Image 1 (cartoon, rainbow, N blue to C red):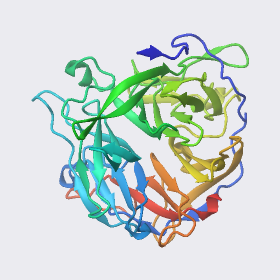
Image 2: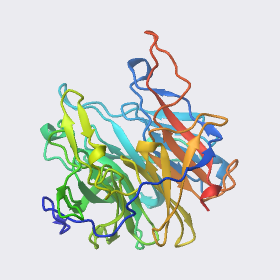
Image 3: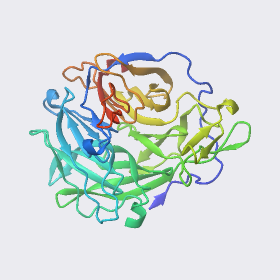
Image 4: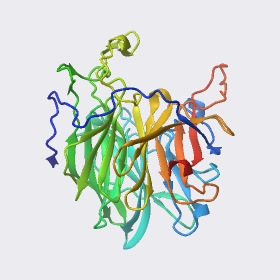
Length: 419
């Protein structure tokens, strides 16, 4: 398997200048019109933790469109356009008593994949617990999902089950169908800066995959003053990528390296053909930080900020493309650290604005991980549908101990403001 010629341990400068000052303008307030039911990350709630959505547009009946979303240990959840749950799919069990069970992290869609000679729409999921990709066929008649994962799918990154249990596993995900009709999944590896490309293949009426290419984003950077800087992570971990989206018209791949910034590269025939370039840095870029065992977290010395950062408040998270035609539209980027979203022109990647999902008919979005968008007009969403994760859903729901339960869900918005 060929690796992209990107330095792994070298001190690497960013390849494209990014704005050097944090955003000071207030974000545009936008409001959701619906929200999905609460998911609770506790035993009573089935350890369900909302993370990443994808939007399936029904090919004949827009009102039958669905939102498919991951809930980590809680599996997959499927919602209608009124944000009502239609289906819940459990994760696969652990293969052995001391092994990790399934944990669904990110989801994306592939339309028109050939299964037994007929086109099928698939929900593709990264199973971070098992280090695999899983596939679910969407039936347009019943609007239900069925597992069509081949029984012999390999690990995406790990060499064996022992390595899987260390959980440096499949994490972020973006799918892509190239001009020849071949489907690929761009998959990041948890706790590393690795990104792999996998070709989806049919195996006796089910879906498997083959590795095609891999790259490793930089972990160390040369600052404008000549000093070296690396983002702070847990001991032994690297600066991981999660948010991933591929422009289906150009093959351009956007990668959100959480504590570094937003990158772009390009795929041709399932292989990376461009050295990754920086689109935007995080505000904390170049700021000294060290891991504090007592806090079990990185402590950042903001007083020593050298002023080399961009606008996004780490972590850089969910990415989505609002497509208008073959090249026009908007790239949406979740700035998790300040509960806002930045937008960029799809063609030029120039910044175009900033917005926040605030309280309205339902509460707003905080600590957003995944996001998805379509420009297709849907019932109730004339400008298209934007779905964002809410990592701190309110009002609080108390548990048996009287303390607030960890509560997450997804917000549905009309996406017309992204035009």
